[in-house]
Image 1: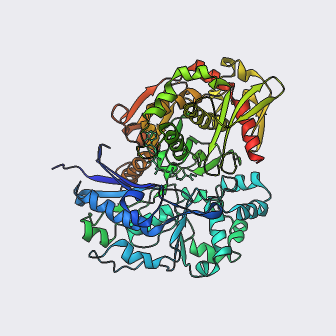
Image 2: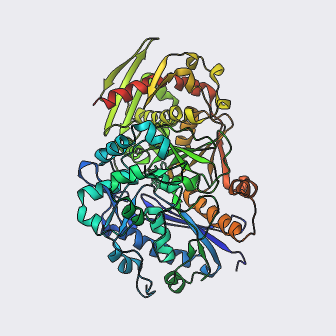
Image 3: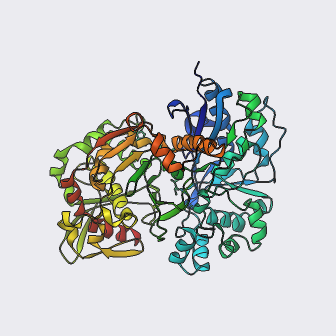
Amino acid sequence: MSESNYYLGFDLSTQQLKCLAIDDQLNIVTTVAIEFDKDFPQYKTKNGVFIKDDGVIDAPVAMWLEAVDLCFERMAKSIDLKKLQSMSGSCQQHGTVYWNCDHLPNDVKPSSNLVKQFAGCLSREVAPNWQDHSTKKQCDELTEKVGGPQNLAQITGSGAHYRFSGSQIAKVHQTEPEIYANTKKISMVSSFFASILVGDIVPLEGADACGMNLYDMEEHKFNEELLSVVDKDTESLKKKLSDPPTSCDEPKSLGTVSKYFQEKYGVNANCQVYPFTGDNLATICSLPLQQNDVLISLGTSTTILLITENYHSSPNYHLFNHPTVPHHYMGMICYCNGSLAREKIRDDINGESTTCDWTKFDEALLDDKTESLFNEDQIGLYFPLGEIVPNVNAITKRCHFKYDDCHVELNDVDSFPDNRLDAKNIVESQALSCRVRISPLLSDEASCAQESKVLGSDLNVKFDYDSSPLSSYAKRPNRAFFVGGASKNTAIVRTMANVIGAKHGNYRLETPNSCALGGCYKALWSLLKESNRETASFDRWLNDSFNWERDCEFVCHSDATKWEKYNNKIRALSEIERAAASK
Ligand SMILES: Nc1ncnc2c1ncn2[C@@H]1O[C@H](COP(=O)(O)OP(=O)(O)O)[C@@H](O)[C@H]1O
Ligand SMILES: O=C(CO)[C@@H](O)[C@H](O)COP(=O)(O)O
């Protein structure tokens, strides 16, 4: 029997609850994955959520409570939870959970279960999901309150976004007044999960709170003007939000795991629970990222992440406080149409939607013969859901394009000559969008204007709020790390790698569960630091402790010729997004 101690990292994401256990040497000892649709069919979710009318997308909180019990039940069969020293983790960002009480009942019986004992504490059965698109009114109110998107981004790190907690809570207040009146506390999904483990409602976490459009990033406190848009009684709202959020400066335990988990699953009575953070914020804790490295998370959402010390805000991207490294920020661009959009093309190519087999999709991606069908003059947008960037309604748009120095001409088509070309076009356009949108977040060292004939031009091209010279997009990241479910797909990774063009290699984690792994590292380092067994900052500790050989796999170099070829599509991408926005 192993003498090692264990540290758990969770990831309560859109479609699954995942949990990893690591030992003192950061070995992944075991993994548990609960799939909401498959393990809890009684809730009838699709990919973990309910898709309703008018852009409303939410998820049943009771299902998450059941998933926590099932996760511990399975984990207890796999490792000795008496050796469990600390837990932390990540959750899908921006979602909010509404409680009808100030404190959770502390007489939770191990003979019962979490849903039986906590579902009655909810004033609202469902939590808004990050894919929701129903809060335009509330987003406009927040933006107007502070004088525009640039000001909102400067204060909160982001322009207004439908999925952000501030607009979602405002909508509940405006459209469900009785529920709001009956709500004593509001958690984000990350603090909800930590509350269940500790057995009482805990404050929001200081990095995930940056995903609300309410929190002043530089003042490290809620912005009164923005709070007033949600609820004029800002003191009452701050009480609901358990103000202030936890600090990201020094790790501080939220307390020991509750008696329920000690008695029901045999968890060590002294196991410490550290604040959970947002899933992307945990992902950047799963790798020792250096300047100009980028991390591409291919989960339900596609997000491209990097770490920066510079607080240069813009409504074109997001900045969050780093969850474990003071005075550092996470830069992020997030897409709604990631894996699920690729799954639709996969099923089209397969001619069925039951096998979920990627073989034909992958062959199409890597089949250079399809390039002879003029893939190079094709551009497509595949948005089965409304997209975040660009901010457009659901649309699928395929075009052939021509361009000269003055303009780009798009010719819409219903389909390309072979539906296998959709595999190339969806992955390329998703990657090209990531690439152009991270450019402003990369430092000048990433510039390679001299390497590109196409990007030498000073022709202006517009994405989101900015119109910039094409040459400003001549940047290549240092290294690219692919994580998330689709990072297991080498064809997708190789294609994206050639579009994004990292200069020093493309890698992926051994585990696709980077968010949960980041939670493990956060749990271990936080305990060592708080108990004075470690003095190094989180980034230095991870840099010294991370086992590159064991935990990270080199996938490929970026093909500079292909990278240059994709530069020809940047203006066409801007033009097709403009055309989609006008629909
Ligand atoms: N071999 C594969 N090829 C392409 N995509 C894959 C593959 N395996 C899993 N995926 C995608 O990964 C997605 C789930 O990724 P994951 O990171 O677990 O999502 P989340 O954390 O958002 O729940 C699925 O929607 C699926 O489409
Ligand atoms: O909204 C965002 C980030 O802003 C999403 O990244 C969600 O945090 C959920 O992501 P998945 O892990 O489910 O893809």
